[in-house]
Image 1: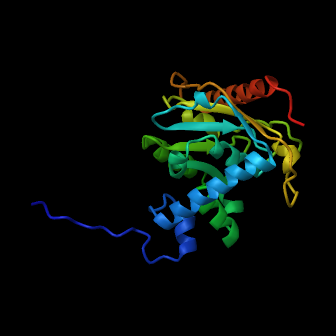
Image 2: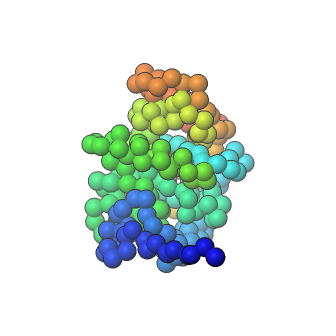
Length: 243
């Protein structure tokens, strides 16, 4: 009989807050349970308070890893994209979140890691290291990466320029990229507002795109970023803004 060997989690003995700041995180059934309960509560709140409507969920790949990209104007964005996914995939969906904002204070770290399952992303220094972490995550089949290529929330509600990092990540790969547009989030919870208004939200999910034939390089990465922004803008143009 083969001897069974048990390895303890690498973060065993670390303070909880340090375990939450680390990535990738070790499996934790307590965190999984809290995240699942939070997801049920948030989905009910989005449905009742914001009357969230999701269109095009059939475009989401059923197998393999993929990336979701969307416009970014509110803290509601990530939880709305997560709400489009089956609950069974919740623990393998990772919104990229600014490490200098979400992983500094204890309350934000707890919310980002436990509720949203965020991946800490460095926006100013060590960007390549963050992109490498994203590549490793996507190399593991079944993971979902949620990225807002603008890098920060819009102050006008209009989609800003997409940074080329998304092109560096998916260019020359067969990773499916799903463009999305979220309407109403800026009106509901713009940057600087303490609490969201009860505005309607609508998430439109577009057809997947692939950039397997794109050659590596800065200009190609910018081309991918521009193409994805155009895809998001085209989704915006398919519907009227929600009141």
